[in-house]
Amino acid sequence: MTLRLSTLIAGLMIAAIAPAFAQEGGPGALGAAAANSPGRTLVLGKCFQCHTDSMFRDQRQDRRAWEATVYRMVGRGALWTSEEIRLMADFLGTEFGPAAPPAIPR
Ligand code: HEC
Image 1 (cartoon, helix red, strand yellow):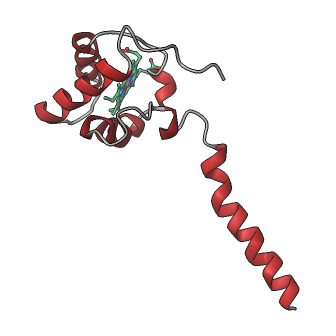
Image 2 (cartoon, helix red, strand yellow):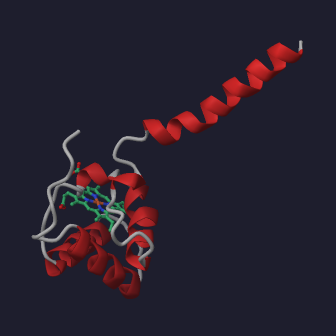
């Protein structure tokens, strides 16, 4: 009985941890360089509400173009303040700027 219970507990723990590893193109895909920047936190919290980062992580463009992209999302229904938009454009223009390395092939 004790053995079966511990097997069950181990199984539950694996089930709880597995999704973190299975995550494809999840938040971990966004560069670690600016790990704690407010822009990164906002992008993680807001861009995934409608689609994953597969929609934008392959793109390389400057800050201004990213700002335009973010405003396109506002046109598609996103509700963000101009401050949030500024911070997200800052982050995207750095992390996914013209000089950024290509996304890791999957
Ligand atoms: C309100 C929902 C919503 C949110 C939030 C959202 N998007 Fe989108 N996004 C869309 C829709 C809808 C499309 C079009 C999907 C399609 O064409 O299949 C799209 C497409 C895109 C595209 C490709 C097409 C284009 O216009 O460039 C990019 C890049 C993109 N999103 C980036 C972002 C980024 C970056 C964020 C966070 C700042 C974000 N999205 C947040 C709804 C959203």
